[in-house]
Length: 246
Image (cartoon, rainbow, N blue to C red; front, side, top):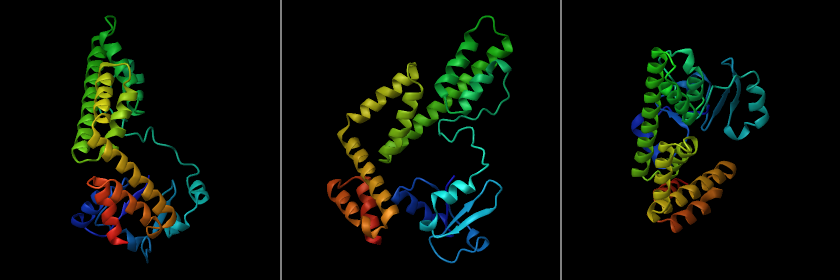
């Protein structure tokens, strides 16, 4: 997991993260700099699975080899996918495969398994009750993700919205829910203004990638081209802000 930390408060960090469209977790009001001996910015610290500092220094000096060595012995999480749904309530054995699928981010598979148990006339009453509960939780989680994607659209975060919608449509393919979400994806693709925002956001990601490899100044041309080509989009506004800071 990548976590960015700042000693600035929310009032400065929040707008900065929003304006630049940062896609990593950012913590504000941190005092970790003194604990890790940070003397300059930016600085990076690599923590191994045991919680010890495996490497520290300027981010440009962190190699893939150092990361690979530090991660030896690390056990992966069940799923890092935003589709992963944690089931808080303990359910019967009949739902074990459905629960596992849900926690692995396989919502379609989990929902199908839960509904199968709920519709099984031979199933125990307790199993059917658990199955109906799980199906309801999964449907509610899908609705939550859809709502978040719509909020992203409203804020002109089309790239993020499409990632959520397309992941849901793919995972739930063949179901009524999946068909409805796939139809929403098509609606978005036919909206010229949203498509322009999407193209601009993709161009901004490429500019960010170049900046990460070669510094902001060397990526200035990419940001300038983006501002000119996609004027009026949120990505262009972010690119313009970056250019003002270079």
